[in-house]
Image 1 (tube, rainbow, N blue to C red):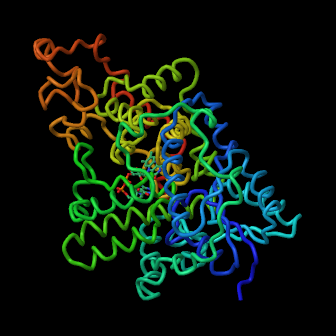
Image 2: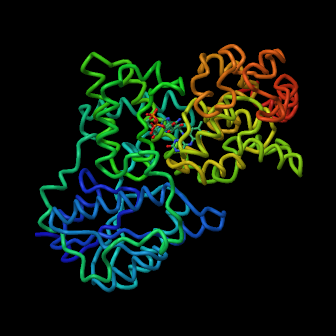
Image 3: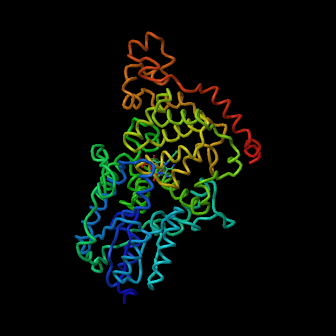
Length: 497
Ligand SMILES: Cc1cc2nc3c(=O)[nH]c(=O)nc-3n(C[C@H](O)[C@H](O)[C@H](O)COP(=O)(O)OP(=O)(O)OC[C@H]3O[C@@H](n4cnc5c(N)ncnc54)[C@H](O)[C@@H]3O)c2cc1C
Protein backbone atom coordinates (compact mmCIF):
# COMPACT_ATOMS: atom_id res chain seq x y z
CA UNK A 1 0.00 0.00 0.00
CA UNK A 2 1.38 3.45 -0.86
CA UNK A 3 2.38 5.51 2.15
CA UNK A 4 0.85 8.78 0.88
CA UNK A 5 -2.49 9.57 -0.75
CA UNK A 6 -1.30 12.71 -2.48
CA UNK A 7 2.19 13.99 -3.15
CA UNK A 8 3.94 16.65 -5.13
CA UNK A 9 7.28 16.45 -6.96
CA UNK A 10 9.02 19.81 -7.17
CA UNK A 11 11.40 19.86 -10.16
CA UNK A 12 14.33 22.26 -9.85
CA UNK A 13 17.61 21.37 -11.55
CA UNK A 14 16.43 17.91 -12.63
CA UNK A 15 14.32 18.51 -15.75
CA UNK A 16 13.68 14.94 -16.85
CA UNK A 17 11.05 12.29 -16.20
CA UNK A 18 13.32 9.25 -16.32
CA UNK A 19 16.00 8.07 -13.87
CA UNK A 20 14.85 10.71 -11.38
CA UNK A 21 15.20 9.85 -7.68
CA UNK A 22 12.50 12.15 -6.25
CA UNK A 23 9.97 11.22 -8.95
CA UNK A 24 10.68 7.54 -8.42
CA UNK A 25 10.22 7.72 -4.64
CA UNK A 26 7.10 9.87 -4.95
CA UNK A 27 5.41 7.65 -7.53
CA UNK A 28 6.31 4.41 -5.79
CA UNK A 29 5.09 5.65 -2.39
CA UNK A 30 1.98 7.64 -3.33
CA UNK A 31 -1.48 7.05 -4.72
CA UNK A 32 -1.44 10.23 -6.73
CA UNK A 33 1.45 12.55 -7.66
CA UNK A 34 1.45 16.07 -9.11
CA UNK A 35 4.54 17.62 -10.63
CA UNK A 36 5.52 21.29 -10.44
CA UNK A 37 8.21 23.63 -11.71
CA UNK A 38 8.56 27.21 -10.45
CA UNK A 39 10.23 30.03 -12.38
CA UNK A 40 11.65 31.35 -9.15
CA UNK A 41 11.57 35.14 -8.85
CA UNK A 42 14.13 34.98 -6.03
CA UNK A 43 16.63 33.70 -8.61
CA UNK A 44 15.41 35.63 -11.66
CA UNK A 45 15.15 38.96 -9.81
CA UNK A 46 18.74 38.62 -8.60
CA UNK A 47 19.83 38.33 -12.25
CA UNK A 48 17.74 41.33 -13.25
CA UNK A 49 19.31 43.31 -10.41
CA UNK A 50 22.68 42.67 -12.10
CA UNK A 51 21.31 44.31 -15.25
CA UNK A 52 20.76 41.05 -17.14
CA UNK A 53 18.00 41.44 -19.73
CA UNK A 54 18.67 38.35 -21.80
CA UNK A 55 19.83 35.07 -20.38
CA UNK A 56 20.37 31.91 -22.36
CA UNK A 57 19.55 29.92 -19.23
CA UNK A 58 16.03 31.37 -19.21
CA UNK A 59 15.55 30.20 -22.81
CA UNK A 60 17.09 26.84 -21.98
CA UNK A 61 14.72 26.47 -19.04
CA UNK A 62 11.65 27.45 -21.07
CA UNK A 63 12.44 24.89 -23.78
CA UNK A 64 13.41 22.15 -21.34
CA UNK A 65 10.38 22.69 -19.09
CA UNK A 66 8.13 22.51 -22.18
CA UNK A 67 9.70 19.19 -23.17
CA UNK A 68 9.36 17.82 -19.65
CA UNK A 69 5.71 18.86 -19.53
CA UNK A 70 5.02 17.10 -22.80
CA UNK A 71 6.80 13.94 -21.66
CA UNK A 72 4.88 13.91 -18.37
CA UNK A 73 1.61 14.42 -20.23
CA UNK A 74 2.36 11.47 -22.49
CA UNK A 75 3.01 9.43 -19.34
CA UNK A 76 -0.41 10.41 -17.95
CA UNK A 77 0.41 13.54 -15.92
CA UNK A 78 1.76 16.98 -16.80
CA UNK A 79 3.59 19.85 -15.21
CA UNK A 80 2.12 22.59 -13.06
CA UNK A 81 4.15 25.68 -13.96
CA UNK A 82 4.31 28.63 -11.58
CA UNK A 83 6.07 31.99 -11.61
CA UNK A 84 6.81 33.47 -8.19
CA UNK A 85 8.99 33.02 -5.12
CA UNK A 86 9.37 29.24 -4.80
CA UNK A 87 9.74 29.47 -1.01
CA UNK A 88 6.19 30.82 -0.90
CA UNK A 89 4.60 29.14 -3.97
CA UNK A 90 5.42 25.57 -3.01
CA UNK A 91 3.85 25.57 0.47
CA UNK A 92 0.80 27.39 -0.98
CA UNK A 93 0.39 24.84 -3.76
CA UNK A 94 0.95 21.96 -1.34
CA UNK A 95 -1.82 23.33 0.89
CA UNK A 96 -4.15 23.90 -2.08
CA UNK A 97 -3.65 20.33 -3.33
CA UNK A 98 -3.69 18.97 0.23
CA UNK A 99 -0.59 16.85 -0.38
CA UNK A 100 1.12 15.08 2.49
CA UNK A 101 4.62 15.24 1.05
CA UNK A 102 6.70 17.28 -1.36
CA UNK A 103 9.50 15.26 -2.97
CA UNK A 104 12.68 16.95 -4.18
CA UNK A 105 16.18 16.07 -5.24
CA UNK A 106 18.75 17.52 -2.85
CA UNK A 107 20.30 20.84 -3.80
CA UNK A 108 23.64 21.51 -2.09
CA UNK A 109 24.00 25.25 -2.67
CA UNK A 110 23.79 27.21 0.61
CA UNK A 111 20.92 29.44 -0.61
CA UNK A 112 18.96 26.39 -1.77
CA UNK A 113 19.58 24.59 1.53
CA UNK A 114 18.19 27.62 3.35
CA UNK A 115 15.20 27.85 0.99
CA UNK A 116 14.42 24.16 1.38
CA UNK A 117 14.58 24.42 5.16
CA UNK A 118 12.08 27.31 5.01
CA UNK A 119 9.79 25.33 2.70
CA UNK A 120 9.95 22.31 5.00
CA UNK A 121 9.04 24.50 7.96
CA UNK A 122 6.09 26.02 6.09
CA UNK A 123 4.90 22.58 4.94
CA UNK A 124 5.01 21.24 8.47
CA UNK A 125 2.49 23.90 9.51
CA UNK A 126 0.01 22.12 7.23
CA UNK A 127 1.02 18.65 8.36
CA UNK A 128 3.07 17.99 5.21
CA UNK A 129 6.80 17.42 4.82
CA UNK A 130 9.68 17.92 2.40
CA UNK A 131 11.43 14.67 1.43
CA UNK A 132 14.83 15.11 -0.18
CA UNK A 133 16.86 12.54 -2.18
CA UNK A 134 20.34 12.28 -3.61
CA UNK A 135 20.13 12.56 -7.38
CA UNK A 136 22.54 15.22 -8.65
CA UNK A 137 25.72 13.35 -7.77
CA UNK A 138 26.92 9.77 -7.52
CA UNK A 139 28.18 10.23 -3.95
CA UNK A 140 27.14 13.08 -1.67
CA UNK A 141 27.96 14.61 1.68
CA UNK A 142 29.68 12.01 3.90
CA UNK A 143 29.45 9.07 1.52
CA UNK A 144 33.12 9.24 0.57
CA UNK A 145 35.43 10.03 3.50
CA UNK A 146 39.08 9.56 4.37
CA UNK A 147 40.15 6.61 6.51
CA UNK A 148 39.88 8.86 9.54
CA UNK A 149 36.28 9.66 8.56
CA UNK A 150 37.06 13.22 7.47
CA UNK A 151 36.06 14.93 4.22
CA UNK A 152 38.77 14.80 1.57
CA UNK A 153 40.44 18.02 0.48
CA UNK A 154 42.72 16.51 -2.16
CA UNK A 155 41.21 15.19 -5.37
CA UNK A 156 43.27 12.10 -6.27
CA UNK A 157 42.72 10.19 -3.01
CA UNK A 158 39.06 11.28 -3.15
CA UNK A 159 38.77 9.87 -6.65
CA UNK A 160 40.44 6.62 -5.59
CA UNK A 161 38.02 6.24 -2.67
CA UNK A 162 35.09 7.20 -4.97
CA UNK A 163 36.10 4.51 -7.49
CA UNK A 164 36.67 1.95 -4.72
CA UNK A 165 33.19 2.58 -3.32
CA UNK A 166 31.66 2.03 -6.76
CA UNK A 167 33.66 -1.16 -7.26
CA UNK A 168 32.86 -2.49 -3.78
CA UNK A 169 29.15 -2.28 -4.62
CA UNK A 170 29.62 -4.38 -7.72
CA UNK A 171 30.38 -1.56 -10.13
CA UNK A 172 26.90 -0.61 -11.23
CA UNK A 173 24.82 -0.46 -8.05
CA UNK A 174 25.16 3.31 -7.62
CA UNK A 175 24.80 3.91 -11.35
CA UNK A 176 21.53 2.04 -11.86
CA UNK A 177 18.71 4.15 -13.26
CA UNK A 178 15.61 4.65 -11.11
CA UNK A 179 12.83 2.70 -12.88
CA UNK A 180 10.40 5.63 -12.78
CA UNK A 181 8.39 4.41 -15.78
CA UNK A 182 7.11 1.37 -13.83
CA UNK A 183 5.08 3.73 -11.64
CA UNK A 184 3.72 6.27 -14.12
CA UNK A 185 0.15 5.22 -13.31
CA UNK A 186 0.36 7.33 -10.12
CA UNK A 187 0.90 10.55 -12.13
CA UNK A 188 -1.91 13.09 -11.70
CA UNK A 189 -2.90 15.67 -14.30
CA UNK A 190 -2.40 19.35 -13.41
CA UNK A 191 -5.58 20.69 -11.78
CA UNK A 192 -7.24 23.23 -14.09
CA UNK A 193 -5.82 25.73 -16.53
CA UNK A 194 -4.73 28.27 -13.92
CA UNK A 195 -1.59 26.32 -13.18
CA UNK A 196 -0.71 25.18 -16.65
CA UNK A 197 1.17 26.65 -19.59
CA UNK A 198 4.53 28.33 -19.78
CA UNK A 199 5.09 32.01 -18.95
CA UNK A 200 6.30 34.16 -21.85
CA UNK A 201 9.73 35.82 -21.90
CA UNK A 202 7.89 39.08 -21.30
CA UNK A 203 6.09 37.73 -18.25
CA UNK A 204 9.42 36.56 -16.87
CA UNK A 205 10.94 39.98 -17.59
CA UNK A 206 13.60 38.85 -20.08
CA UNK A 207 14.15 39.30 -23.82
CA UNK A 208 14.84 36.16 -25.87
CA UNK A 209 18.56 35.38 -26.12
CA UNK A 210 20.59 33.93 -29.00
CA UNK A 211 20.37 30.38 -27.59
CA UNK A 212 18.39 29.13 -30.59
CA UNK A 213 20.67 30.83 -33.11
CA UNK A 214 23.62 29.14 -31.40
CA UNK A 215 21.83 25.81 -31.90
CA UNK A 216 22.45 24.79 -28.29
CA UNK A 217 20.32 21.65 -27.92
CA UNK A 218 17.80 21.84 -25.08
CA UNK A 219 15.85 19.40 -22.93
CA UNK A 220 16.20 15.65 -22.56
CA UNK A 221 16.34 15.18 -26.33
CA UNK A 222 19.18 17.70 -26.59
CA UNK A 223 21.15 15.94 -23.86
CA UNK A 224 20.63 12.58 -25.55
CA UNK A 225 21.81 13.92 -28.91
CA UNK A 226 24.94 15.46 -27.37
CA UNK A 227 25.71 12.27 -25.47
CA UNK A 228 25.39 10.08 -28.56
CA UNK A 229 27.62 12.44 -30.50
CA UNK A 230 30.20 12.46 -27.70
CA UNK A 231 30.25 8.68 -27.24
CA UNK A 232 31.43 8.40 -30.83
CA UNK A 233 34.57 10.39 -29.95
CA UNK A 234 35.03 9.65 -26.23
CA UNK A 235 38.21 7.69 -26.98
CA UNK A 236 39.95 10.86 -28.14
CA UNK A 237 38.77 12.92 -25.14
CA UNK A 238 42.00 12.58 -23.15
CA UNK A 239 44.02 14.42 -25.78
CA UNK A 240 41.41 16.44 -27.70
CA UNK A 241 39.86 18.06 -24.61
CA UNK A 242 42.72 20.53 -24.20
CA UNK A 243 42.44 22.22 -27.60
CA UNK A 244 39.68 24.83 -27.76
CA UNK A 245 39.48 24.77 -31.58
CA UNK A 246 38.81 21.02 -31.53
CA UNK A 247 35.47 19.36 -30.80
CA UNK A 248 36.93 17.49 -27.82
CA UNK A 249 34.65 17.81 -24.77
CA UNK A 250 31.04 16.68 -24.46
CA UNK A 251 29.36 20.12 -24.12
CA UNK A 252 26.99 18.44 -21.66
CA UNK A 253 27.64 20.87 -18.78
CA UNK A 254 24.44 22.88 -19.26
CA UNK A 255 22.50 19.61 -19.26
CA UNK A 256 24.16 18.49 -16.04
CA UNK A 257 23.35 21.91 -14.61
CA UNK A 258 19.65 21.57 -15.35
CA UNK A 259 19.43 17.80 -15.02
CA UNK A 260 18.09 17.06 -18.49
CA UNK A 261 20.29 13.97 -18.25
CA UNK A 262 21.12 12.06 -15.08
CA UNK A 263 24.67 11.84 -13.76
CA UNK A 264 24.15 8.06 -13.47
CA UNK A 265 23.48 7.79 -17.22
CA UNK A 266 26.71 9.64 -17.95
CA UNK A 267 28.87 7.76 -15.44
CA UNK A 268 27.43 4.45 -16.70
CA UNK A 269 28.22 5.39 -20.30
CA UNK A 270 31.78 6.26 -19.27
CA UNK A 271 32.18 2.96 -17.40
CA UNK A 272 30.84 0.99 -20.36
CA UNK A 273 33.25 2.72 -22.71
CA UNK A 274 36.09 2.00 -20.26
CA UNK A 275 35.27 -1.68 -20.24
CA UNK A 276 34.66 -1.89 -23.97
CA UNK A 277 38.38 -1.54 -24.62
CA UNK A 278 38.24 0.87 -27.53
CA UNK A 279 38.14 4.40 -26.21
CA UNK A 280 38.89 3.21 -22.68
CA UNK A 281 41.61 5.76 -21.97
CA UNK A 282 39.50 8.75 -23.02
CA UNK A 283 36.48 7.44 -21.11
CA UNK A 284 38.55 7.07 -17.93
CA UNK A 285 39.65 10.71 -18.18
CA UNK A 286 36.06 11.81 -18.73
CA UNK A 287 34.82 9.80 -15.73
CA UNK A 288 37.52 11.54 -13.72
CA UNK A 289 36.06 14.92 -14.77
CA UNK A 290 32.62 13.79 -13.63
CA UNK A 291 34.26 12.86 -10.32
CA UNK A 292 35.69 16.40 -10.04
CA UNK A 293 32.08 17.53 -10.23
CA UNK A 294 31.11 15.30 -7.27
CA UNK A 295 34.26 16.46 -5.45
CA UNK A 296 33.32 20.14 -5.64
CA UNK A 297 29.72 19.44 -4.56
CA UNK A 298 31.18 17.62 -1.55
CA UNK A 299 33.54 20.52 -0.79
CA UNK A 300 30.67 23.01 -0.95
CA UNK A 301 28.57 20.86 1.36
CA UNK A 302 31.31 20.58 4.00
CA UNK A 303 32.73 24.08 3.60
CA UNK A 304 29.92 26.45 2.57
CA UNK A 305 32.17 29.38 3.63
CA UNK A 306 34.07 28.95 0.31
CA UNK A 307 31.34 30.97 -1.38
CA UNK A 308 32.80 34.08 0.23
CA UNK A 309 36.23 33.10 1.56
CA UNK A 310 39.35 31.30 0.41
CA UNK A 311 39.32 27.57 1.13
CA UNK A 312 42.81 28.07 2.58
CA UNK A 313 42.21 30.96 5.03
CA UNK A 314 45.75 32.35 4.74
CA UNK A 315 44.96 33.34 1.14
CA UNK A 316 42.45 35.86 2.41
CA UNK A 317 45.46 37.95 3.51
CA UNK A 318 46.35 38.64 -0.13
CA UNK A 319 45.97 42.27 -1.10
CA UNK A 320 44.29 42.43 -4.48
CA UNK A 321 44.38 45.43 -6.78
CA UNK A 322 41.57 47.85 -6.07
CA UNK A 323 40.23 51.24 -7.06
CA UNK A 324 39.74 52.81 -10.48
CA UNK A 325 42.77 51.18 -12.09
CA UNK A 326 41.64 47.71 -10.98
CA UNK A 327 38.16 48.42 -12.32
CA UNK A 328 39.61 49.44 -15.68
CA UNK A 329 41.72 46.29 -15.87
CA UNK A 330 38.69 44.20 -14.93
CA UNK A 331 36.54 45.88 -17.60
CA UNK A 332 39.24 45.15 -20.21
CA UNK A 333 39.26 41.48 -19.14
CA UNK A 334 35.45 41.23 -19.24
CA UNK A 335 35.27 42.82 -22.68
CA UNK A 336 38.20 40.89 -24.15
CA UNK A 337 40.50 43.93 -24.53
CA UNK A 338 43.62 42.69 -22.73
CA UNK A 339 45.82 42.54 -25.84
CA UNK A 340 46.51 38.83 -25.22
CA UNK A 341 44.68 37.09 -28.09
CA UNK A 342 43.91 33.77 -26.36
CA UNK A 343 42.46 35.58 -23.34
CA UNK A 344 40.45 37.95 -25.51
CA UNK A 345 39.15 35.17 -27.78
CA UNK A 346 38.10 33.18 -24.69
CA UNK A 347 36.22 36.17 -23.29
CA UNK A 348 34.56 36.65 -26.69
CA UNK A 349 33.48 33.01 -26.52
CA UNK A 350 31.77 33.39 -23.14
CA UNK A 351 30.24 36.76 -24.08
CA UNK A 352 28.87 35.54 -27.41
CA UNK A 353 27.85 31.98 -26.48
CA UNK A 354 27.75 31.54 -22.68
CA UNK A 355 30.21 28.64 -22.98
CA UNK A 356 33.94 28.68 -22.41
CA UNK A 357 36.29 25.79 -23.04
CA UNK A 358 37.80 24.35 -19.84
CA UNK A 359 41.42 25.10 -20.83
CA UNK A 360 40.42 28.70 -21.46
CA UNK A 361 38.57 29.00 -18.15
CA UNK A 362 41.88 28.12 -16.51
CA UNK A 363 43.83 30.55 -18.70
CA UNK A 364 41.52 33.55 -18.20
CA UNK A 365 41.12 32.89 -14.47
CA UNK A 366 44.88 32.73 -14.07
CA UNK A 367 45.27 35.89 -16.15
CA UNK A 368 42.75 37.83 -14.06
CA UNK A 369 44.18 36.82 -10.71
CA UNK A 370 47.87 36.48 -11.48
CA UNK A 371 48.51 38.87 -14.38
CA UNK A 372 46.05 41.58 -13.38
CA UNK A 373 46.07 40.97 -9.62
CA UNK A 374 42.27 41.06 -9.40
CA UNK A 375 40.37 39.23 -6.66
CA UNK A 376 39.15 35.82 -7.89
CA UNK A 377 35.67 36.66 -6.56
CA UNK A 378 35.24 39.31 -9.28
CA UNK A 379 35.86 36.74 -11.98
CA UNK A 380 33.76 34.14 -10.22
CA UNK A 381 30.82 36.53 -10.22
CA UNK A 382 31.29 37.42 -13.88
CA UNK A 383 31.24 33.72 -14.77
CA UNK A 384 28.17 33.16 -12.57
CA UNK A 385 26.26 35.73 -14.60
CA UNK A 386 27.53 34.74 -18.03
CA UNK A 387 28.05 30.96 -18.06
CA UNK A 388 25.16 28.85 -19.33
CA UNK A 389 26.45 26.00 -17.19
CA UNK A 390 27.13 28.09 -14.09
CA UNK A 391 27.25 25.82 -11.10
CA UNK A 392 28.25 27.37 -7.80
CA UNK A 393 30.36 24.41 -6.65
CA UNK A 394 32.35 23.87 -9.89
CA UNK A 395 32.70 27.59 -10.57
CA UNK A 396 33.94 28.36 -7.08
CA UNK A 397 36.21 25.32 -7.21
CA UNK A 398 37.61 26.40 -10.59
CA UNK A 399 38.29 29.97 -9.48
CA UNK A 400 39.87 28.95 -6.20
CA UNK A 401 41.98 26.41 -8.10
CA UNK A 402 43.24 29.06 -10.51
CA UNK A 403 43.94 31.63 -7.78
CA UNK A 404 45.67 28.90 -5.69
CA UNK A 405 43.41 29.57 -2.70
CA UNK A 406 41.37 26.40 -3.12
CA UNK A 407 41.65 22.84 -1.93
CA UNK A 408 44.07 20.93 -4.14
CA UNK A 409 44.69 24.10 -6.10
CA UNK A 410 47.47 24.95 -8.48
CA UNK A 411 50.52 26.19 -6.46
CA UNK A 412 50.64 29.99 -6.23
CA UNK A 413 53.98 30.17 -8.05
CA UNK A 414 52.62 28.34 -11.08
CA UNK A 415 51.53 31.20 -13.29
CA UNK A 416 50.21 30.45 -16.76
CA UNK A 417 51.97 32.36 -19.50
CA UNK A 418 49.10 33.44 -21.77
CA UNK A 419 51.35 33.38 -24.86
CA UNK A 420 52.87 29.95 -24.35
CA UNK A 421 49.42 28.55 -23.43
CA UNK A 422 48.21 29.95 -26.73
CA UNK A 423 51.12 28.47 -28.71
CA UNK A 424 50.61 25.10 -27.06
CA UNK A 425 46.83 24.74 -27.11
CA UNK A 426 45.85 26.79 -30.18
CA UNK A 427 49.03 26.22 -32.20
CA UNK A 428 47.65 27.32 -35.57
CA UNK A 429 45.53 30.10 -34.07
CA UNK A 430 42.30 28.54 -35.31
CA UNK A 431 40.36 29.37 -32.16
CA UNK A 432 41.73 32.91 -32.00
CA UNK A 433 40.83 33.51 -35.65
CA UNK A 434 37.25 32.32 -35.00
CA UNK A 435 36.68 34.93 -32.29
CA UNK A 436 39.09 37.71 -33.27
CA UNK A 437 38.71 38.01 -37.04
CA UNK A 438 40.75 41.24 -37.02
CA UNK A 439 43.84 39.10 -36.28
CA UNK A 440 43.01 36.39 -38.83
CA UNK A 441 45.67 37.40 -41.33
CA UNK A 442 48.58 37.30 -38.89
CA UNK A 443 50.86 34.28 -39.31
CA UNK A 444 50.47 31.22 -37.05
CA UNK A 445 53.64 32.37 -35.31
CA UNK A 446 52.61 35.97 -34.63
CA UNK A 447 48.93 35.52 -33.85
CA UNK A 448 49.63 34.57 -30.22
CA UNK A 449 51.44 37.86 -29.51
CA UNK A 450 50.70 40.49 -32.20
CA UNK A 451 53.08 43.03 -30.61
CA UNK A 452 56.00 40.76 -31.53
CA UNK A 453 55.17 41.04 -35.26
CA UNK A 454 57.20 43.55 -37.25
CA UNK A 455 55.38 46.71 -38.38
CA UNK A 456 55.42 45.30 -41.94
CA UNK A 457 53.90 42.01 -40.82
CA UNK A 458 51.18 43.84 -38.94
CA UNK A 459 50.50 46.20 -41.79
CA UNK A 460 50.08 43.44 -44.34
CA UNK A 461 47.76 41.58 -41.90
CA UNK A 462 45.68 44.75 -41.41
CA UNK A 463 46.43 44.90 -37.67
CA UNK A 464 47.05 48.29 -36.04
CA UNK A 465 47.85 48.01 -32.37
CA UNK A 466 45.84 50.44 -30.27
CA UNK A 467 43.34 50.84 -33.10
CA UNK A 468 41.77 47.55 -34.21
CA UNK A 469 43.49 45.45 -31.56
CA UNK A 470 44.78 46.58 -28.13
CA UNK A 471 48.37 46.59 -26.97
CA UNK A 472 48.92 44.24 -23.99
CA UNK A 473 47.51 45.88 -20.85
CA UNK A 474 50.26 44.32 -18.73
CA UNK A 475 53.70 42.91 -19.36
CA UNK A 476 53.46 39.25 -18.35
CA UNK A 477 57.00 39.00 -16.99
CA UNK A 478 56.53 42.08 -14.78
CA UNK A 479 53.09 40.93 -13.68
CA UNK A 480 54.56 37.59 -12.73
CA UNK A 481 57.05 39.27 -10.39
CA UNK A 482 54.30 41.41 -8.84
CA UNK A 483 52.22 38.28 -8.27
CA UNK A 484 55.03 36.46 -6.55
CA UNK A 485 55.37 39.47 -4.22
CA UNK A 486 51.60 39.62 -3.71
CA UNK A 487 51.50 35.95 -2.79
CA UNK A 488 54.50 36.26 -0.45
CA UNK A 489 52.03 36.41 2.46
CA UNK A 490 51.19 32.75 1.86
CA UNK A 491 54.65 31.58 0.85
CA UNK A 492 55.59 30.19 4.27
CA UNK A 493 52.51 28.00 4.48
CA UNK A 494 52.94 26.62 0.97
CA UNK A 495 56.52 25.58 1.62
CA UNK A 496 55.75 23.72 4.79
CA UNK A 497 52.72 21.86 3.41
C1 LIG B 1 37.46 29.04 -13.48
C2 LIG B 1 36.57 27.85 -13.81
C3 LIG B 1 35.19 27.97 -13.68
C4 LIG B 1 34.37 26.87 -13.97
N1 LIG B 1 33.00 27.01 -13.82
C5 LIG B 1 32.19 25.95 -14.04
C6 LIG B 1 30.79 26.06 -13.87
O1 LIG B 1 30.27 27.09 -13.46
N2 LIG B 1 30.02 24.97 -14.17
C7 LIG B 1 30.58 23.80 -14.60
O2 LIG B 1 29.83 22.84 -14.86
N3 LIG B 1 31.89 23.66 -14.74
C8 LIG B 1 32.73 24.70 -14.49
N4 LIG B 1 34.07 24.56 -14.67
C9 LIG B 1 34.62 23.24 -15.03
C10 LIG B 1 34.76 22.97 -16.55
O3 LIG B 1 35.43 24.01 -17.16
C11 LIG B 1 33.41 22.76 -17.23
O4 LIG B 1 32.66 21.78 -16.53
C12 LIG B 1 33.56 22.26 -18.66
O5 LIG B 1 34.33 23.16 -19.41
C13 LIG B 1 32.19 22.10 -19.28
O6 LIG B 1 32.27 21.68 -20.60
P1 LIG B 1 31.87 20.21 -21.04
O7 LIG B 1 30.54 19.83 -20.53
O8 LIG B 1 32.08 20.14 -22.51
O9 LIG B 1 32.96 19.37 -20.25
P2 LIG B 1 33.54 17.88 -20.38
O10 LIG B 1 35.01 18.02 -20.54
O11 LIG B 1 32.82 17.07 -21.39
O12 LIG B 1 33.28 17.31 -18.93
C14 LIG B 1 32.09 16.61 -18.58
C15 LIG B 1 31.50 17.16 -17.32
O13 LIG B 1 32.38 16.96 -16.23
C16 LIG B 1 32.23 18.02 -15.30
N5 LIG B 1 33.51 18.71 -15.17
C17 LIG B 1 34.50 18.79 -16.09
N6 LIG B 1 35.54 19.46 -15.59
C18 LIG B 1 35.20 19.83 -14.34
C19 LIG B 1 35.85 20.55 -13.31
N7 LIG B 1 37.09 21.03 -13.44
N8 LIG B 1 35.19 20.76 -12.16
C20 LIG B 1 33.94 20.27 -11.97
N9 LIG B 1 33.28 19.58 -12.91
C21 LIG B 1 33.89 19.36 -14.07
C22 LIG B 1 31.20 18.97 -15.87
O14 LIG B 1 29.96 18.67 -15.29
C23 LIG B 1 31.24 18.64 -17.36
O15 LIG B 1 30.04 18.93 -18.03
C24 LIG B 1 34.92 25.65 -14.38
C25 LIG B 1 36.32 25.55 -14.52
C26 LIG B 1 37.13 26.64 -14.24
C27 LIG B 1 38.62 26.50 -14.39
